Amino acid sequence: MSILRYLRYGHHEAIVVTLDKFNRPNPSAMGIYLSNNLVLLRPYKGTRTFRNLVSLGEATINLTNDSMLFFESVYLKDRVKYLKSRYVKPPIIKGNVDLYIECRVYELVDEGNRASFYMEVLDAYEGSGSRLSFSRANAQLIEALIYLTKMESLRGEISCNLLSELLKRIENALSIVKRLGNNALVVPLNFISSRATSIFKEYCSRE
Image (tube, rainbow, N blue to C red; front, side, top):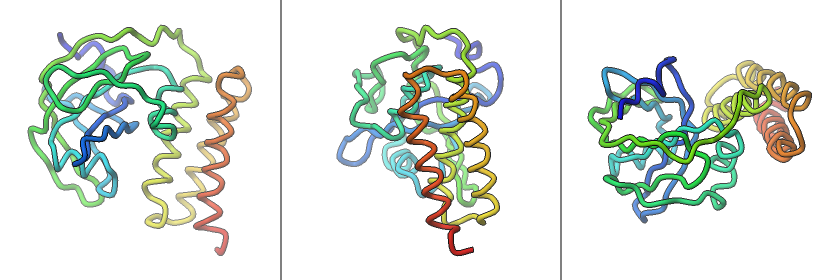
């Protein structure tokens, strides 16, 4: 299956599943690109995803539009259910997934605090689907999660001005979620807001 039609707009958000040395799956929300038929992943070096890719060199990429699946994959990992993959050791996620991509590391490029993993696609196949029409609340919750994961990864390494900018972006995104979303999004909304504020205060309250 050609994955171009799923990744035709450049940067796309996905849930990447890797395995640690104890064969425990680690789901992580991450931006991905398609580059000359290779999938590009760019994790920060301090993350489990980076360590697992260096160790095993395999991953599954789970494409979905469901913000709740993103939230659970980042902050409620015990709730994520898995199915056996076809060609790689990391499993695929059971649930509202539109496309599965199984891949292995083809090339690793060091980029300072990040690394670029160019992944060879071994197989790609459709899942059950997220069955979601476009929702600004759903999209903005994913946006807020992206900024929060940046705060998590970079806290202590970037200035309070940059942390403040990330916090403002989260607050702007969540204001749309609050205005347009329903009760299903209340729990992640409150969690993200509280967590982002807590990180900022922890690292910047003395400035």
